[in-house]
Image (cartoon, rainbow, N blue to C red; front, side):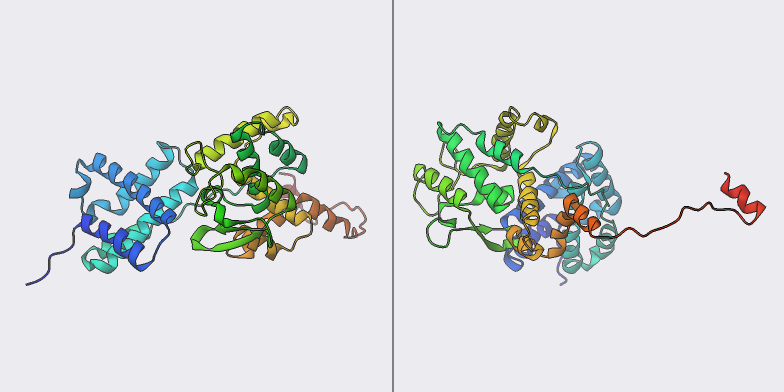
Length: 333
C-alpha cells in the first residue's frame, strides 16, 4: 500500500522540528525569523483563500500567491526591500525542503524558488563624530540606577561595536574585567568572538556590575525586574540619551540614530585610527572583510588623503571641432 502524501501542516512542522532544529541546529534567532515569516504568510493566505491555515495545501502557496504576499508586505505593511527579502528567504528554504520531501510538489516549489530577491539602494553609512559620541555617553543621569546602567551599556556598545541583539544577550559571565580585559560576544550565525575592552569601559563596568546579581548567567544590563532588556528597550533608552545630548549637539535633532549607528561609528573610528580592515572585520564579527570594506567607501577623509597624494595631470584647454556637418548637428542637440 502506497504511503499517503504528507500534508502541508505536517511538512511545515517537520521543516521547523527536523530540518531547522535537528538537522541544521539553527539558532534561536533564525527560527524566530522564519516563524514570524510563516505567521504572516499563513494569515495572508487564509484571508485570501478563505481557508484555515491547517487546511492549506502546498499548491495553495503557489508563486502568484507568494508574489501577492510580498507585495502586501511592502504596500500594506510598509516593509522595506530588506524585510521583504528576509521573508522570501524563509519561504524559499521551506520550498526546497518540500521539493525534497514531496516530489509531487516539486513543480510548485520550483515556481516559488524562481521568484527573485529584490534589489535595493544602499545609502552611505551614517556614523557619529567623537564629540557626538561623548555627548551621548554623558547624557544618562548617573545619580539613578537606570542612568548608571545606560551609561555602562552605551560605553560597552561603543567599545564592542556589538549588534543590539548581541548587547542584550551579554551576561555577567561574558565580561572579564581583570587580567585579559575582554567581552565574549555570541554573534550572528553562532559565531563567538572576543573583543578587548578599553580602560574607560572597564572602569564603567566595574562601577555598574556590583549593582546586579553576581550570577554568571545574569544579564549584564537588566531591566528593573532583573530580566534582559529587549531590543526595543535598548533603542528607547538610546533615544532618550540622544534627546538629552541635543543640548550640547543641537544638530543631532535631525539625525536618525540607532544602536546600529554606534556599530558603524566604532568601525569608522577604528579605521580612522589606522586599525587594519581585517582586524575591524574580526572586531565586528563579519564573516568576510569584504563586508567591512563599506566603511572604507564611507570614509571621506581617507579619500581626500589619497587624492592629495596624486599629482594632477597637466593639460591644455582645447575646443572640440566637429569634422562633419552631421556630427555638428548631433552635437548641437
